[in-house]
Length: 467
Ligand code: PEP
Ligand code: MN
Image (cartoon, rainbow, N blue to C red; front, top):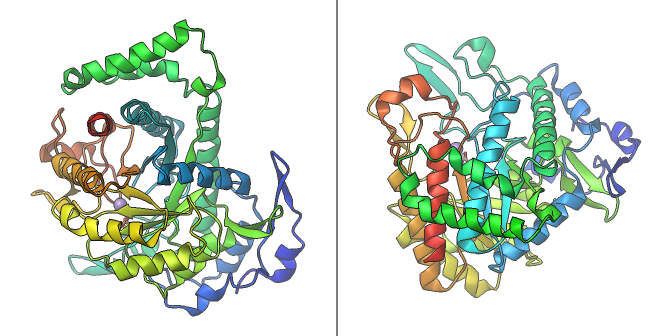
């Protein structure tokens, strides 16, 4: 245990808008149970001379998000679970400190908002918008060590833990990076809040937004849907609709709750209810590699009140799923649990139906989301990790088909994307091929859809939703 009870228990409650108070969580019963359980994918850094001071600093810093916002999101997700809204989650595989610039953040938010407008039209339902942002810094790895030539070093685990450069210095885990990740997340959230609450998200700007898409060969294919959205917006404007809902939008922050030293240090007690919340982001998910039932991650997250995601790969069994529900959502609280399936285009039509049926029959009201990225990763001929746009779309289609045939609700989309003109995934109407990777592959981890590919996906999903 690294946070001293004395320090955090005397911490002054923080006042947020709406008089929501949070206090430290040093003594809350059960929150340290995870430390006694098997845990995967963590750095071995407890003996590092800077570990205690980094954790102490995080423990006394202000929360990045507030319990009232988190509860509101849960109510929104309850609407998704009942088929009255759609969820869009998107952003980098791994955020970077250098990537937290105003230009890159605004491009990403703008692309997500554009996708959301298209999906809102396609679904004729509100879209809950969520960035893999402001905290998506820790990565699970398939191997602890990486070898290049005759040099073997610790694998890169995300910039919250170590550096990407393949040198001994950079690969040694450094707990001070958690503080930098916190500060970078705070700066990112600050910008996101300004954009989405300060008029940047004005729906009437959709016309300009579409202009960015016009030079895409796919534009012609979507012209009619884009034109209809445009006409609908202009009609509302002509009617004098000047309501705030057109100008502002709710936008939530999400990340994988992988690094438990960080999540624990940012856990606070909501003074309204006395319940613990992870305040590092509104929504957190448990990855495919850390969702074992008796492991530390499932235990820790079962004790906080945020809405939770769990990634489900093709090996997921019905028993796993029912036990996860029992552990993470024993009260069957609508909006609490989101299952993010990442089966691969080849598996989804076969593997998903029994899982959806079992959950439906159990009476649990979960949100079903498709992550069509992680089951479709391949290595390109020139060695880059990539994905084919067509495989990604095929998994999305499979997801819709399965839910349609079972009469259940396909609630959302989870994608790795960016607002920039990168070349990381293959295909799309404005075709990206491997030859572009050397110049325009920027991701430190998994390949993302670029701006045009992201919009194209939104149009294709909107088509699927209107069918
Ligand atoms: C991710 O979302 O980047 C990730 C590692 O996913 P998964 O847990 O599904 O492998
Ligand atoms: Mn990824």
